Length: 258
Image (cartoon, rainbow, N blue to C red; front, side):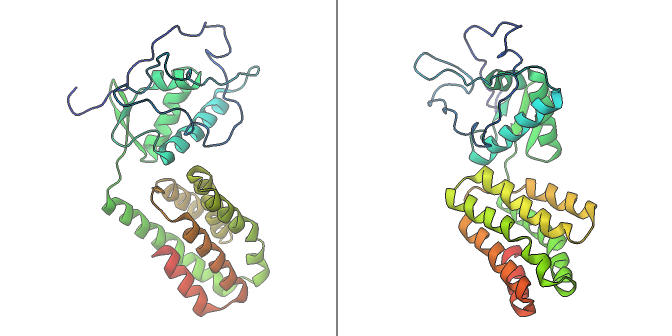
């Protein structure tokens, strides 16, 4: 249909129904493994396999596990693919084709995509699949503003009430973001950033607040962001919080959430 770039079906023999690759479980691997898969050359549809490119990656199954475990691992890999750009904004992807890419049935892929649709990362295209959402500059700015309105007041309130040793316990989380930024790994950084902010907000003792803020952070677009600068702001904020220097805290909060 005009205006929609439909993913092509993969050619070649399908795995036997009883084989591990037909309904296999994704093995434990890094969140960026999907993003590292070969990108189709120009002129070929995504999902199309030819003899000139490596075989489509398959995941080794190990025994019987719950579907939710498969879905969770597929969801992590899809999020990594969205962050890396392997799943391109504006393109439509079908669950069966992505299922073949992962070596699983279409069901856990469809369930994972539906979760991403609830998070606003993709849109449902009836009878076709899922279109990757395109974030405009205005949408990204609006998300940043909402995150600031939710998180900044809580951090400032906690700064006035918590002792310095409570903040010191968050140092490893901040250092994780620095390490992820140094690697330039978007998926790893997104996970580390969310973990740091969850740890900060958890100190307020409000589970609903943590969930809402976490959902907002999942909607972030990290492509083009200065990860090292963002991670350095985490460290600067913790330094100020441990020193209980309100002037420095206000500056750090403004810089990070502006």
